[in-house]
Image (tube, rainbow over all chains, first blue to last red; front, side, top):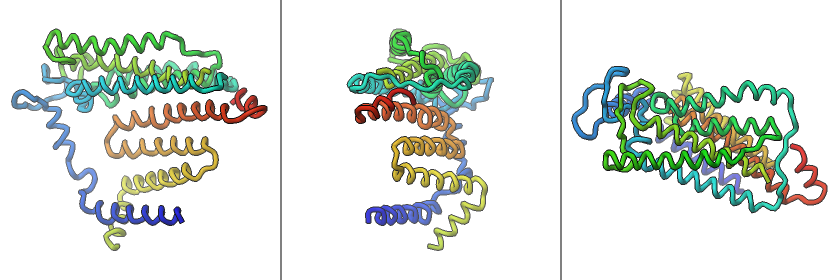
Length: 241
Length: 106
């Protein structure tokens, strides 16, 4: 009976979604949302009227990151990102406490696979490099600190699956602490120089260059290290007894 | 009801819409499997597959940021964390010989 009700509710929902709602909204790709939203934000300026921005040519913009999402996440709404980082920190603490409360102290062991172990040696540097690329180029291409850090943590997970002797040492904790403190220090430096917490106090440079967008690459590097170390710690907390 | 079929056929006509419907249907199938599966590990793997398929939808909808995050977090790390947690708690529930056998090698 419950299943019949579930199917009925899903059917009514799908009928209204496809039959009533989808015909109203315009076709995908024909809205030109890109020019309506993205270009206006790339020409961004909250202080004065805006001029058109050219890739690799315009310099000294209000915020020089080519990636719109990054410019909002780490520049205009950087305080939110600090909150997100602390939420992730609280989640890691919760996982650590829960894992330490479990009764079984036996650590999870895997069977040794020669193929997996050998191929890990080849794939692991590439995975770590890709993670670092994602968070260093966060202001130019899609990505940022959180996906990059997660990719690094996935590399650590691969190392764990392939190698039983591998353990995440205290280095991860120290990296996480110092990276989290570094983010706050960048914010305080902005406060000292510009008068606003987490202000973008460095010159923004030319749009599209690696060294542009002021503090955004620095902050994303800190976030990448912090998230990578934190999530490695979460996995190792769950694995170790 | 005619609107319903008309819009459905319109969506099926262009390749991107057909792919979206295929991927969405697969996601629904995996979701049902995750609910109905007997073993929890199967449910977790089905959830991972849902995340992996939603990455395709995010790419189609031009949200590469979300796609990268979903691929790394949703289908990689979250599944690993949940499976590790499942194994750790499973070893608690079982007792005697089974626990020893389950805890030794995976």
